[in-house]
Image (cartoon, rainbow, N blue to C red):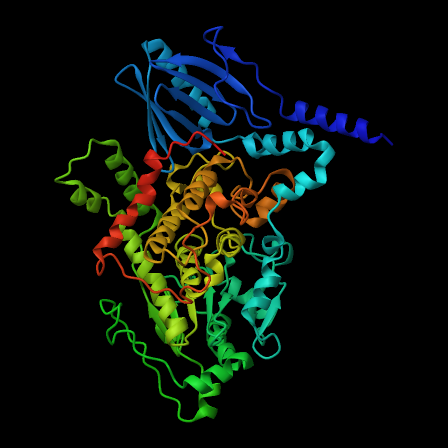
Length: 577
């Protein structure tokens, strides 16, 4: 056996061999690297642009102008092109646009070639900087390996999130719900978590049957329970009905069982007995009067019938359900745009940001991008869920086509509005981990940093759009969120930067196979609750328990919140971490 010193040497050799430093090429012998490198970072080129020093490493592009500094992670850059012969034009995935002027056409072309080689999707995941960063950190802090490893990891609230959330939300695991391990080792659905909450009387055999009927085998699974009344939120992929009107008895039974399990939840019966029948027709006025749907149910007479009468389940943003197949359910289609429309809208917004502002036409130009319109529909969809669960004590089932884009947007927003825990820094981390990462939002495809992810039609700022909605809520409830705007801006940056491994791959199964948790650092080690830079000084833990908000149509000042996305244009911070 080798002693401790020898073991550290072997680790040092391993880091150097797997992630060797690149040889620095200076266009001028007097030039030095103009920034402090991160662990594992090596600068490959340093040169002079017009009135600037430009440097390219295996992690970032750094441009030092006379009056400002631009630091942008390579994976944050979407495209590079040469404009006006001597100018490089960089378009970034977070809405930033960067321009750099050169003295000669040849120099401009050379840097264009270097950057295009640097930003291409990796041929293997280990080419992403997060792996080199972690390996070199473990070498540098070898004597403090255990302590550094803890700092790289998320907290216990994240690692034990499923168990903690089941206990916190008070699921009745005796009479109403159970935890199914049918997806252990991802054998049922590769994009779902391994543990799923389902009604207690639904068998695994029935779940297998349902999986064959749902898109990508993404079966209805419960992800939230209202602690006051027991109503739940479930999510899934769309049913494979087809033009022939296929149906699945087990699927219909599972959907109906969700509502019945809520009624059987002994921990919620006392609330129902006290409050009486709270179900109302959403179309009878209120904030959502412009949405037409029928949510009336038969009134139960007496406490006994109320305790066993299942509430009418709301199926939101449904694509293919046949209402006649799902009795005591109400299907509402929200008409949310697909990823192609969202991508086009974001590109229009980014183009608007690159142009000289015309004060007379700015608002109409902004409206024409449809970005705010898409945010409005998303926020309104989340509010429907909130009213159904909190006000009317009704269970809700949410899905889009596949259940990994619009579904997490709606569900995560609704949970954020319903539960003040998710508005804390730790709770928000749990929310992102559970609704976005555990349930398989395709970060690698949508962000474009997956292995050979060259298909531009798969890219879309779905998560960024959701974070913009979160920012809208911050603006309306300035005392309700423990984290500030800087927290969201930094989260957007590191969604794409690949400095951390949190958002690598398309699902938890892939992250497990690539061992990203052991080989990369977590973004939550930066965005931790103890980091005062991300604390909202106005936050009060005694603020609203349930937040309901104004939509753009009813409250025009909300539109000012678009500054979160536009902030990326001006947020060229010197500290790239």
